[in-house]
Length: 310
Image (cartoon, rainbow, N blue to C red):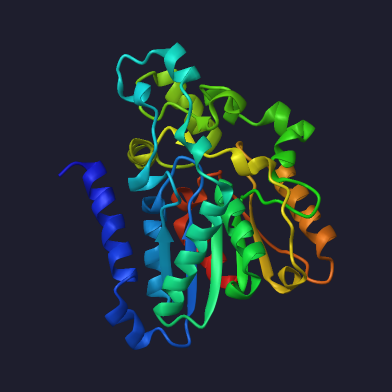
């Protein structure tokens, strides 16, 4: 069994344990359930190290694959043809363009229902990066279903401002390193596209610099081999209506000071916008000295931060 198979098997085992109703219902009552929602190009597998730590702390953890991601990945056929035809890869439409924003919110709410079925009394939804948007959409749709939101260096819409507006901030637009690895115009293909299967050492190094400079090389190489090339973009422009009940949800932002994808200044702007929108329930900020891929760089620190939000 190779490293990728080991990584996948470990993640599948963690999820299988988390969703076994007989075991969970026996001792889940009184516990907090943490729903772990991945970011762009990732899947449930990226949470394995975090889920195990949450479970070892005596709480419930459940990861999900968002629509079009993980084992349900929708990848352009050109991605699988090597050597890569750069022109075809840059223009082939993404299947994410066909997935409505509501599908992502519903996926989160289905995960919440599964945690409730496991006996969880409280639900904290955790979103990494792009995953901050689905958890926000879900909480806006059914605010009574979620007790807390944790944004792990994550984007979110706020009243009157879509999440994509934060990507247009001057420092973010000028200094984020992510643009160096994007292989297609998201507005034209309907998805954020990178070449996770690239054999170009310079390209792979650029990806690591943007996402995971502090992650051990062997861990990151394994993670990249698990990633899919496309991610959704449609909800970056969504204007979201937040019901009054949303204001009472506890919010925590895990700020990653070494993040070169979603810059610290952008993270600060998101927190400021959250606090401006809901000043009577300010967002708790937890500082981490980590890159964008904090769950691989410092899983102990990420798990501790998430548990403190419960």
